[in-house]
Every structure is written in structure tokens, then in C-alpha cells.
Image (tube, rainbow, N blue to C red):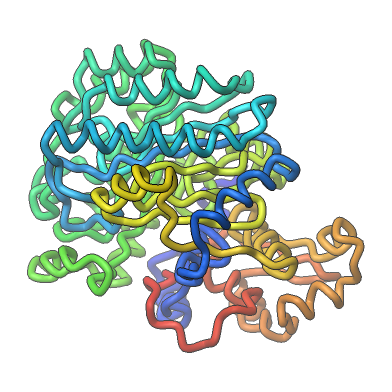
Length: 469
């Protein structure tokens, strides 16, 4: 297990800050490859259904279902998700009817012998709607499919709307993991970002979930107005004391050209890069000191957690629902407005407007707005990017052997020149020898930059991404 001292030097030192300034530039977050910016409108409903049928014959064999509830009772200024203000009950009824109808359309094309290894509810604020809607959809799943023995059934929850009866109902429905979007314990920070505080004490929430044998992720965002390195350290220390199974510390991505509400935060002042680095350092130290393992750049998990064990074996994976192991991942079939399905060789995204989504489902049974079909070259690039972003390493020899190709063939597909890694080697961020790259602990700060070297789709003129560090 890494310890904090493995970083090798002070993250807030002048030396490290100069590295931040050197590598701080726009770049993909690589939650998918190719990124969603490459999705195109030539991909439609028929394409998607044909690929759903085809997916039954490809790996991974497991099924992952994602359900998107885009509604929030109150919109947070920092949020970059596709959300909508909470509608009247009659509209929610129609929206859930549409989700059920879309599910039935897709389910008829899926092999019922395939097992479900993941179910994830995201948003928006899924726990702000009546649990009767959630139960209805979950019962529909049980009517059609079987779960794997270790299936993860998860939901993103806003603590402002979590009650004890709701927690009991989530448990009775079958949820076994909950991600609680704390963002920050400081009520003044929450006020600045227009987010309500937790309805119940956060420690009480954790106890209630653990009493029901439900695992908990606590999610936080750093880089928000009102935060300082010391205040964020206090937040993470409090989180560590609560002993959730996982802690997540997302770096706030300021993209007001995508989400105009984020402009409101500029009047309060956003922390600069060095201040954010101090927050990051303090969060890492607090988590490491209590024995949590670093997963990717922003997740922390207990040593016996599935993610920690997968990372140790270089078997960590990531899809649109988050980190998982290669063993538990499945092809993702997504339902609801703006949701993205992630099949073995393609992505399909639904239209963003809830009303347009409802109308499309009524008319066609599906609501695909755009997507992307990956070529053989894309699939190899996807695997390479995944290895770097998830497992902090890349073995070109292993990939070439798996694909029955020469390493030079893989390099040509990637447009890769080993000399492009020299700056990272000279700065002590990676090692590269005999076609194997290892990312050093401090190099995790720059995973996106390192991955960009292996991305042949980049032009060098990208401006429509958040900054990499």
C-alpha cells in the first residue's frame, strides 16, 4: 500500500507548482474513449438497436443498467451534470412511464441468460422522487433478468432529502451501495453553491445505511468558493472519521460555456491552481493517514475494497457509472434523458430534454440523439487509455500479444512516439522501459496529460475541455 510519503516531495512546493503550470491545459477527462465530444448525430435509434442485439455476442457478457433521474428540487451552481428543476407529479409520472417503456424496448433484444452485475441510479437527484417510482423500475428488472451473486445496486443521493424511512425503503428494494453527495461539510460553502445542507447529521446517515448493510461512498468537490486547504482538510478528516467504504474528492471543473450557472460562482472568487493543489494534498494526506488506498486520481477506498483489490492486480476498470473491477463490469444499457449507453464497441446517447425524451419514447420506443461506433483502432486506443487512467501503467507488449499484433503496429495505431514521453520522464512523473510505462505516485496528478500522448484523435488545438490539473 502506498503511503503519503511515497509522493516524494511536497505537493505545494514551488517545484510542484511549476509542474502544474507546465501541464495545466484543456484536455479530455477520459470517462470514455473517444470522449463524448466525438459523438455524432448520424448515429440513430436503428443503429442503437442493432448494436444492442449484437452486444449479446460480445464481451463483457455481464449487463450494467443505468437509470437517469434528471430532476433536482434545487439546482446547484457548481453542477456540470444535465439536470432540470423538479417538475409536477404528473410530469414525473410520464417520465417514469417512458423509462419503463424504453427498458421494455431494449430488454426484448437482450439475452435473458446474461447476468446483471451493476445497477446504478444517477441524476439529478434520484432520491428526491418518490421511492414508488424506483421500486416500479427495479421490479421490472427482476421480471426479466437475474442478478449476479455480487451485483452492485447503487444510487446517488443528496443528503438534503434523505430520511430514515427512505433509507429503509432503499434497503427493502435491494440497494447495497449509496453515494452521498456531501460536497462540503461547511454550510457557508454550501450556501455559496446554492446547495441545501444534510437533513440529518451526516454521521447519523452513515450509521443508518450501515445498519442495513449498505456500503457508502462520500463524495466531495474541491475548488469551490469559500474553500481553503485547511477547511477542506477538516472536511476530509471528518469524512475519514466516519469510516465510509469509499471517499471521492472531485476537482471542480469550471466550464461556464457549458453550464452558464457556473458564472455565478465567479462573483465569489474561485480558488487558484495552487490553492486547489493544497486542498488536494491535504485530502490525500488525510485519507492515506487513515489507511485508505488511492484509486485513480480522485477516489479512495479501504484496502479490502473491491477497487483496491482490483488495482493491486491491474484489473481496475471504469465506465460512465464510475470505477469498478473488470470482473464486475458489464456493457452499459442506459435509460432516461441524456443517458449514455456504453456497449462493447459503441456509445449511444439519448436526447437531453425530458419532454423530448418522453415524446420520443412514445413514438419510437427509443430516444437516441447521437452516438459513436468504434473502429478496431478506436477499441485499441480505448484499452490503452483505460489502462493508464485506471491502473497507472501501460504494457504495450501485453496488449500486442492479446491482439496478436506487433508492438510497432500498436504504436502506429496510437501515432505514438516514445520521445513524446521524455518530458514526463525528465520531470519524474513516469518510467518507460521495454515498452512498459509505470506512472509514479506524483504522476497521478497528470494522468490526463499522460493519456493524451496516446490519443491519436487530439489535434493539439483543443479548447472545449476543462483543464487537466
